[in-house]
Image 1: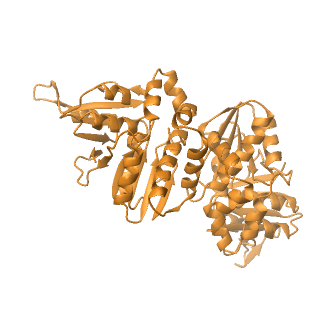
Image 2: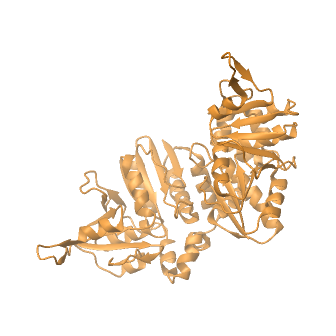
Image 3: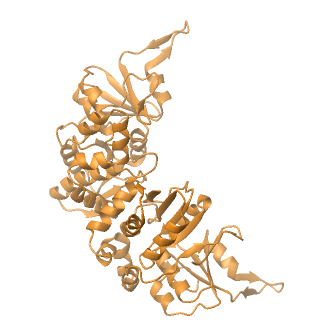
Length: 248
Length: 248
């Protein structure tokens, strides 16, 4: 079995893909499902998200479909018109039962769309569901597991590579893999950057979120393997530009 | 002063750029200049390189301009029609006095072209000239030094990130820098992956070159700071698609 870690999304995934954007999209995704959301809809753009929830009736009034709640951010800040701001702490205080959360974020949702272009199985992974995500990937994969770090604005993110190292360590404990340079780099970070909170707090995006007053989200994201929920892309996709994930 | 390490070429460089492709383009570049080459011409494609050396006269015969020698590779192997195969060991056995070496390689020359699109000062760095390259960059830079890893076929290369860590360590010893996640990752590799030969030998491309019988090139590239030559992009560029570097 091959283990490949892409420090930035590259494409060309043939088998099982773990998408990683731990500050904060893939961490928040787990929190939405933990709090009862029946599905996550990852959209290609904020407009696609808004169009899912809001339609215009014959009288020209905006009609809101109560089935959908919108969560997302740009540059760490909530998107105008959205209901939530891509915060796992915020999500953990809500009840999403019988609702679907429509997500659009700066980097994570784009990475998921790249993964879905060719991947057979696409899962969302974070530190909080790391062990469960690694186990699921191992069970699904036939020839290759690709861990895809979303990064930040096309630059490599330390926290995603660290999380990829945590996932890689779990996978290496589960069986034999041939690994690539990306996996070697991720494992080296995992083994030498200290505990998760040290790693996340030293990352550029961790520092940025702390400055925005979102330090609780960073601390939330630094907990390892506390959830067994793995957001899993449904095989049958519906609308153009929308990926539907359910709890797996 | 900012220190930025791009694990893959990204673009948007405003100041001083160190281009790193240690297996083997930027290592071989130093070797060509050490052996007397008056300039290195890094071309956008093999065709541009061949067109520099070979022209057709009025009788339809190919005329070779003896000023130019061509060095390059695709997938580690020499390019048909080229004189040399991008090997530092091969280069070290030649005399290039009064010749200009035209280079085209899979990743390194492309990275140099991306760097040159916006960078004010573009230098070629490897382990063999690491200390001199770091010193030169520190002397030239006003606000930012960007270390740009060429990678291999758009994937991150362990050996380039390791070399970026060596350069970053020298730079941090020369003054104060604010560093990005890429620099943190590179420094972590440098400090934890063992000596240069261990790092290079464990990289995918190091293993690949060894299999091609080019292990001597890997060992050559693993020597640190044995040359003080820094290939430096000339400010005035001539032909389209050709970057001219001289010994600095």
